Length: 497
Ligand code: NAD
Image 1 (cartoon, rainbow, N blue to C red):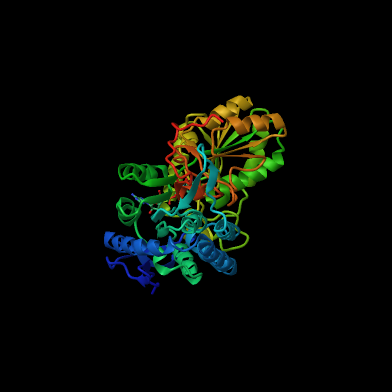
Image 2 (image 1 turned 90 degrees about the vertical axis):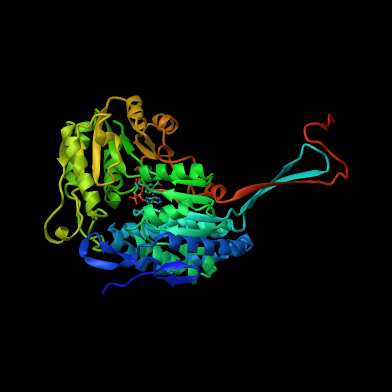
C-alpha cells in the first residue's frame, strides 16, 4: 500500500478535509508509486491561511538576523540531505541525478544568501532638504505570502520564493505542483527541523484550480508569487489585479541560441545539447530555437544530428542516462503533436521525432531528442513553448537578422550568442530582448545571487533571486524625523544658503 502523505496546517501534519488523495508516480516507471498526496479543498486553504496569519504576527517581530539564522540551518540541513533529496526528486520528476543534485544545490545557495541578508536587509538614510531633519526608509514584512510553483525545479523554485519571503518576515503558504509533491514535503520537513516556528509555514497539496485558487482569491493573502505557464499566470494576474495584490509572475519562454559563422562550433555544440535536451527540454530557459548563420548552417546541423541521435535515454536514477522522461503522458502527447505541426508547416525531422520505446523506456514517458530543420520564423514550432526535447533550427544571414528572429516572439526569458567577435557580443547583449543573455554559453544556468526573470509575456517586471527579490517581499516604509523644534514645510520653507 502506498503511503498517504499529509498537508502541514496549523502546526500539524493533517489529512485533507476532503478525504481525497491523488497518486504520485515515477515518470520513468509508471508501476512505481511514490505515494498518495492530499487533494485538498478550500476548507484546508482557509485553515492554513488563518494559521499563517498567526504565524506572521510572531515571525514578523523576530529580528531579521535571527530569521537569517534559521535559514542558515536550513542550508546546512540541505547540504546534509542533498543526495537523498536529489534521488527522491529524480524518482518523482524524472530528470537525471546530476541535475537534481544541481536543483538542491540552488536551494542551498539560496538559503545561505538569505541567511546573510538577515544582517543586511538595508534601508537608506538620505539627506533631508530641510535642516535638523532626518529622512530614511526601511523594509517591513508584508503578511502571508502564497507561493505557487511548477514541476520542473521542485526544490530550487520553491526556495527562490520561500527563503526571501521568510527572511523578510512573511509567513508562507506553499502549494507545490501536483507532479512533485514529495520534494515539497521534504522541503517543509527541513524548514521545521531547522526551527522555523510551525505556523509560519503551511503546506497545501492539491489542484491549482481548487486549492491554489482558494489561496489566490483570499483577501488575507496579500502577496502571491507564481511560476508556471503563461496561461495560468494570466488568469492569476487578472484575479490579483482585481484584488490589488502584490504579484510576481515567472512564466513561459521560447529561448534562442544564435551561432555565428566565427563561433567555436564544438563549444556551441556542447552548449546546444545541454541547453535543448537537459531536463528533457522542460526548463523555462530551455534552448528551443537554434538560429544558425548560413555559412555554418549545414556543417553545424550535421554535427548536431550525429550527437543528438546518440544521447542515452533512460531512468534518471541510472548514472549513464543523459536524458530522462517527460513529466507525464499528456506532456508527451503535446510534444508529439508539435512535431506533427512542424512537419505540416514544412519543417523536416533531422533526428528523433517519435516516442522512445524498447526495454525500460516502455514503462515511462520517454520521447526522442528531436531536431527540426528548415524552420522559418513565424511557424508555430518557432513561436510557441513546447516544453520538451524539441529544437527548431532556423537559418539567417546576419547578426541583425538573428536578433530580429530572437526578438519576434511573445516571450523574453533568455538568449545566447556564440561568437568570437567582442563587438558583436556587446551589441547583442544590448539588442536581444530578454531578461538574461549568455555569451558563449547556452540559454540555461542561472546563479542564485543574481536576479532572474524575463520580459514581455514571460514575466510582470519582478525578479527572483539575487538582491532584487528582497524588494518584492518587503514593503518600503519611509520615516522623517524633524528635530528642529519648529514647523518646517517641505517644498515651501526652502533654504537658499
Ligand atoms: P502550470 O501553470 O501548469 O502549473 C504551475 C502551478 O500553478 C502548479 O502548482 C499548479 O497546480 C498551479 N495552478 C494551476 N492552475 C492554477 C490556478 N487556476 N490557480 C492557482 N494555481 C494554479 O505549469 P507547469 O506545467 O507546472 O510548469 C511549466 C511551465 O512553467 C512552463 O510554461 C515553464 O516555462 C514555466 N516555468 C517558468 C519559469 C520562469 O522562471 N519563468 C521557471 C520554471 C517553469
